[in-house]
Image (cartoon, rainbow, N blue to C red; front, side, top):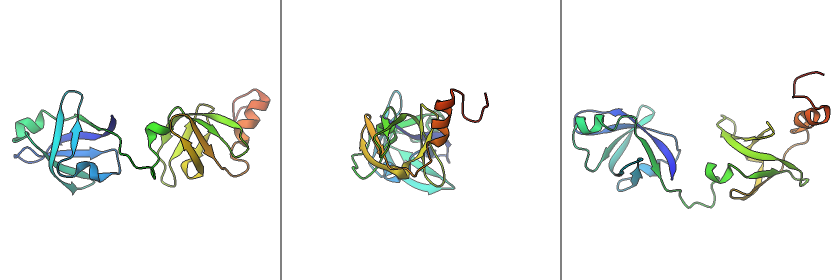
Length: 167
């Protein structure tokens, strides 16, 4: 299951809650959608955008007391099947190989960045996702990067010191 967001607080007296999403897929809050926490499932009755978050009504949450009890609850759902999308869970742990078939490292994290999210590799390198040309989920990511993007890392490997340090 993938983390989608968090219930931050109640909204009003009818059981609505404010949800902060960590996904850009707002259809996750469509009427009838099923979300889960660590110990229960929630069915979305309705949702509407509100000041950068979402006001959500769940079936079975009918008053402010019930809504208050959900504050801080992390929401999860099954991954969507969309072959056109890159999913973080398919990138983490995959080996990155450049256009010359040189192994560049394993993805340890995906870093949000306004221009393009970045793959953070165990080698310390950062690779913009826009350079991804092929993906075998969880196994291998092919990238076509401009010359020089790995030079700092290669220089550190050659000198035996960390990037930015002198011997």
